Image 1 (cartoon, rainbow over the protein chains, first blue to last red):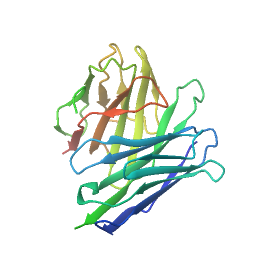
Image 2: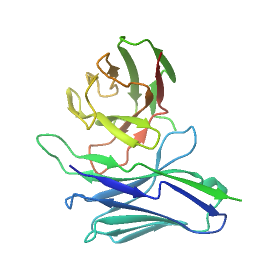
Image 3: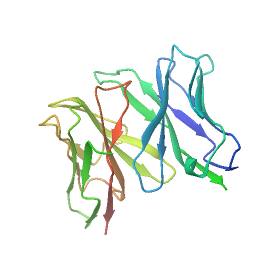
Length: 116
Length: 113
């Protein structure tokens, strides 16, 4: 089945620096790649997503890039701020298998700390 | 953060007891999901449902059961067969299964005493 690997597991940066989190996936049929942010004690929330027909997507300070050939995608956060500190999860969609319906497989998460 | 709720926030259970976690949504979403979150393990899918009266096993369904009798409700039962049930459980919903944003509930922390 689909396997999503996420690196690094922890990341510490200085305020104002950039942060990059990388994910790889195994199923070439995956077409949808969301990123979720989970602040301490809160629920995960979608921050950006990308579909396989697009190579890059930006939303203010965050961007996601996708390389379908290499089966990897990355989250880029520029000009980091302390409020960016959270756990970030990547995910990849899995097409329906064995009578089931489409679902997401999540990476194990990256704990980002932005130091003032 | 409104729209999808879980109760209770904290739950304590004795070994050998079944316990049911509640998940309700008023977003009119067809698809609902249950995830288990353990430190360093990410979000692992337990069960999911793409429509009322239908549900499928996820990656770690053993020891769990669900029902989907109403569109807005997707309760999860943790049975005594689940060997390591202490965890944080997250419910989510989306307008349809697959390539759509999932909206998460606040979670239930289950502790087995």
